[in-house]
Length: 608
Image (cartoon, rainbow, N blue to C red):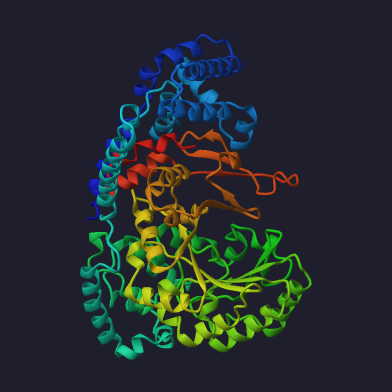
């Protein structure tokens, strides 16, 4: 159940109270005394270097040569603190941890330092002092006392018990394939069909679905229950004619009782937050310039084409979708759902394809938009004919969300067009889709993906790791189902650092924790996707690799500041990207407000 505002306030107070100026100064009094004895900030900075190096040297001098979790945490926290103490990092991040600690040591009043800040530095220094929190699923090491079959049986029993704990967590999240969910949605769909005067044949027609999109507040409130915030936000975006629309099919995935929280991720996909709605309105007509977070205008060598890498480019022939994702990367480009003027003119498409044809380095083309599968069969066939005629293009990808929002669009006729352009050994055709949650996996989706796969077309998923899908084992539940459906996990994206999408953002540390504590427990083919942060003008930064980023600051509000390195840093000199993350304490407070226990996420502080 959703918490009331009063309960949310109590949860926030309870968590924030753990981290305070007084608590920190008492716990770290010995270190602060060492800093207080230094005559200058520079001397205090040097003393911090001495302290962290000493602590790490003690940890590494142990005669126990086995892997030790405490040593790992000390190593990671020590690396983070050394980076945070660099003057270069202070200049780039606009904040100084060394100065904050020196001020605290000398009793200088710092009203700007928040509980979230004290939470960060408390765990950072605890980690170096080797007093980390407990592991999520501790296991006994049988190999110290057992050998052979006896060791194997004991280990296997422990693994069974471990998976039992994992499975218990996975079962918290319903899927659209659960019998009770199917039954509930069948009733809901019948009510929608009656309200929209649709037969079963109508419902299974993608053309009927796109002719009956829900695009205004009265139409939406007549068909589904909304919270007060949802109603206000939708009212704002529709009043100002900002892009908004929901297919009847996707609306059928929403529950009659939003307070139950099962469909939270489904609603978050398409119902804007108040923050987003107000920010979009504030941008007004300037949004085409100010909301281009990825700087696609700066990486477009010709209209309709975006290029950030040597051997692949993006082609955007169709500038609309059957349904608008609330936090869409291209919300600055799209005017309305199924805009009749969305298809680029033939001359413009010809110029884009001619440009690709004159660049043999382009080996792969990603056709996206908008959603290109919302075009007609004839338009898609014509476009594919043109792309397939370019000799050096060996892979054609379609970026599409219709498997989630409009699975009936994947008709036998469309799939025959796509499949006919496959030429094994010469050209591959594939779909890259965007499934967010196990609640989106439905029998209609399963049947549609089966039709796709029978044409020899691969399907890959890009998950955007938003707040609404970030609970313990929530993404793991999705990945397990995706593989059973026939969709390969491909990328997991950190939500972009755009101000208007702040309600969707998750700390980088949470994604790192998810990868190492949850995804690692899944079968190999269910965890093959790559976690990335998409950087303006630079492209994908691989989050899994620590050499691709540095932690360079912690702001007084508790937000970490990272310097992300460009993918071509070992190829040419290129500027980095400095980005400010979501405060971890703020994220934990939001989890508590929806009923999660922050203690279940305790290890998040130690991922940098």
